[in-house]
Length: 148
Image (tube, rainbow, N blue to C red; front, side):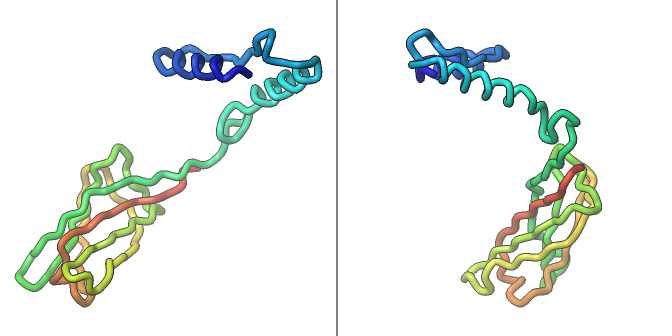
């Protein structure tokens, strides 16, 4: 297939919802064997409809960023407040990973995992009791799960 055809097809499809079919131009193919190869690839590509083939099954892995903020309920107690600002509610089988960074780099980033659920807009308070928790200055949280 000619590179100009691919670029034009890509450009047109990005501006509108027009599907492109890669049809070779007359000068693009050298023999009849190449035409058969193009047709065979086209037939195979049409058979795959979705992530699970014609049945439409398959799994989707979701990775969702959650907001995380350090809070101090009392002078020597540090907690991470995780809030679900995402579009998806976090199910109970989702793995939530919390990573806390510290001043002076000691200890290294502290990572803790636990499981959901966490509804949209809901908050979860996670007390930090690891060594060096008072030197914490930031945190990130992420939820990961598989939808069937």
